[in-house]
Image (cartoon, rainbow over all chains, first blue to last red):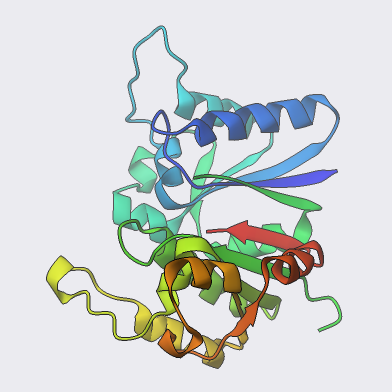
Length: 118
Length: 121
C-alpha cells in the first residue's frame, strides 16, 4: 500500500512526532511504500537542524533526515514554516519547504493519508 | 469531476486558543483550488468556529471568520455540523453565520466512511 503521512505536532513536545516516524519505518519494513511526510502546524519544527537534544536521546530531525535519504520526501509547509522561522537555512538535509498544493497532490496520489497529531 | 477525490476536513478545535482551526482553514482553501470534492465536518469544540459575532480585538489575534464566510466562493459548500456537539454546548443553528447541514453523529460517521481522505484539523 502507498502511504502519505501528515505530521501536525512538534518534536519532543508530542508523541505524534515519534509515532509518525515509527509508523513510517514499520510500514516500509513490511514492504509498503511511504512516499512522503508532510509537516504542518508545529510539525514543521521537526525539520530544523538547529535542535540539539541531549546525546542519550533520539535526534528527531536527524531521524527524518535519514528517512529522507532513503527516498521518503520530507516536506515542511511553507506557510506554517514562515510563521515559525523555519527557512531553507535551518532545514535538515534531505528535507525541503513546499506548499499545501504538494499535500493536496499527495492526498490524491496515495492509498492512505495518515495524520499524526493532537 | 469523476476523478475528484472526496476529502473531508474534520474541524475539532475551537477557533481561538490554538492555531489548528486557522491553519486547517488555510489547508481547506488550498485543497479547494485543486477541484477536489471537499467537505468539512464540525464536531466537538470545532462548532464554535461557526458561531456569529466573534470579536478577536481584545486577544489581539486576526480573526478568520470572514474567510470562513466566503468558503462558498471556493466551492466548499458541504459544511456538516454534529447535532450532539451543538446540544452539549447549548448552540442552536441560528447561532451560526453560515448555512450548514446539521447531522447526527451516526450520519457524519457514515459520510466519513465514504471519503477517500480524512484530515483531522
